[in-house]
Every structure is written in C-alpha cells, then in structure tokens.
Length: 409
Image 1: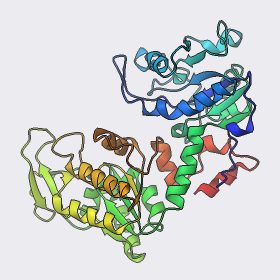
Image 2 (image 1 turned 90 degrees about the vertical axis):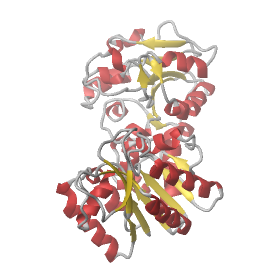
Image 3 (image 1 turned 90 degrees about the horizontal axis):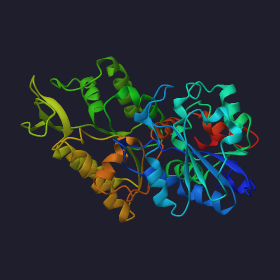
Image 4 (image 1 turned 180 degrees about the vertical axis):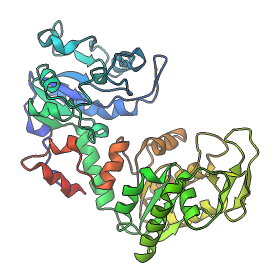
C-alpha cells in the first residue's frame, strides 16, 4: 500500500545536513536512562541516513520544561546511550542557545559525527509553533526528517512550522507506524475485539465512538469501567468514577446495543479500602460492594469472560490497563489478559495491536512487548490516529494533497 508520503526514498542525502526530529522522550531518573525502546525504534532511520552520506543532528523534547532551561529535563544523559549504539562515532552535544549562531552549529564535526541538540522545549517558541523560531531552526540544516510519530499530533515548530523552510520527509519509524497501523487496524480481520481500559472515560470518548462501528466485541476495564457500572445502576462504593460522564457511558452502551455489539464489563472485581501492596483484598461480585470498597482490578470471572472473547476474535486492539497494575496484587487482570493475548498471537490465532504508555509498560513489565503483532510507540498520537484526527505533523509530509492522509482513517 502506498501512503503517498514523502520518505527517505525521495531524497538524495549525500553531504546533506539533516535536521532529524526524533522522540527521545524517555524515562531519565537522576541521570540514569530507563527504557530505550524509542531510541532503538529510530536507529534504522539514523543508520540509513548515515549510510547514504547524510550528516545528522538529532532534535527531541523531554518532559514539559515549559520553555525554560531545566537540568531535570536535559538530554545530556543520552550521550552515553548513543555512544553504545554508535561505537567509534563522535557524539557532540549542543546546549545553550545553539540557534543564535547557526554557522557554528556544525563546527569541528565531520561526516561521521552525530550531533545531539539539547531539549528543544527549552525554547518557549517551540510549543507555540512560532514561524520565526522555525526559520532559525531551518538555518541549521538542509533537510528535515520527522521520525517522531509520537509527536505528530502536536503543532510545534520542530514538527510543523519548520517544514515551511526545509524540504521535509518521513523517517522509517514514522513510515512504519503508519503502514503497520493501516495493515493491522484498518485491514484487521473480523471478528474484531477492542479492549479499552485506563482511569477515565473522558479521555477515551472519541476512541470509543470511532471504534464501535468497526468492532464486534468491546471490553471495558480499569477505572473507566466504574463509570459504566454506575450507568448500569450498580453501587461501586468509594471507587474512582466520573459522575459527569455517566450520560456518555449510557449513550455508548445504547449505541453498542443498537449496533448489536457485545460489551464485556466487570462481573466481579478485586476490592480493598486503599491502594497498597499490603492492604487486605477481597474478590466480590459487582452487586456485592459495600460502602468502603474501592475497585482496583477485575476478578477471575471477568478475566475468564475476556479470555473467551479473545478466543472468538481474529483481531485485538488494546489500549489501557484493566486495573491498578503498577501495584501488586492489582496487576493480575492486566497481566493475565496480556499473557493470554500474546499466547494467541504466537499461535497465530489473533492479530494483536496495542499503543499508549500504560499498555506498553504493562507488556514490558512481563517481557512481552515484542510478542504483540504490533506495538505502537505513539502514545497520545496513537489514540488520535485511532480517533481519526488528521494530525498536523503528518499533513505536512504528504505529497501534493496533504488532506490525502485522511485515507488512513
């Protein structure tokens, strides 16, 4: 399938200085780099540009420094990581106000050097998508390559405005994300199951509305399931819920009923009075909760229902944990669902797709992140893609007619 994207296949990279926008927004605690998945995902793009004679400067954000220099959000710790991936390659770190002297940016570097620029969000004009700032960024390079699918839903200068001043192309990771999402989601085999979890229904309303016509089975877990239980008239004790979203939950349930979609909500839950590893837990049917109960996970009967639903399905879209999985023993619902989904994936009985930080983290905690058919690095961008939004960072990379990216949805 042709995505009509401008990619690395469309440019001569020999002796070109490349502004490579990556997403290295990864955990760094006290200078120690955590999960390197996003760095590894962009390695094919970096290596191909180098092999074709291009010179690379890497630009990324980290956290939310709000336009101020903050050592907590420095990218400097990534130097050692990059040196491990690129031995015998000089990694030059550019900090300070590097855009004010573009003629010095590449000074004392050669074609083998990789430049790592300091956090682009240390400049307040980045998140404003400021044209003047983007023009200064463009003076640093000959070509812009965007390999940061996870940021394509943001109208920021290093993603959108810069494309007004430099020939701009998609990197291999971004290209792969779109191709894979189209293949696994748009062309997914039926019956199609969606498992949507997480804390709040308010953050998943558009996703739910978009996917319901496509799927046959909808599983709902996590804190957002509590709002649906309230909508059905259940008492949920002191459990997390969004009372302002009950009418939305009712509408979604009615839409599913009208379209003859199967909905799986918790029929039993793991409850406690507080979220703590040492707290006393009880498994209760959903109609047995008392005043002090808080729901922190789904129970074994619900897990069995979800496994049966997976057995009926050919494609799975999963986003969001099924309980408070970061705290044992409330990780069992999420972990058992993930393990069974990966088992069926390995047996080629289903195609499985996931994205979003918590879902990927849950898989990673089990060492299963490579066992789904497709794991998106996109985070919020993954959800917006599922919602069908045309993202500004993608629009500017499409050939001829930017709105043609709507074919992906």
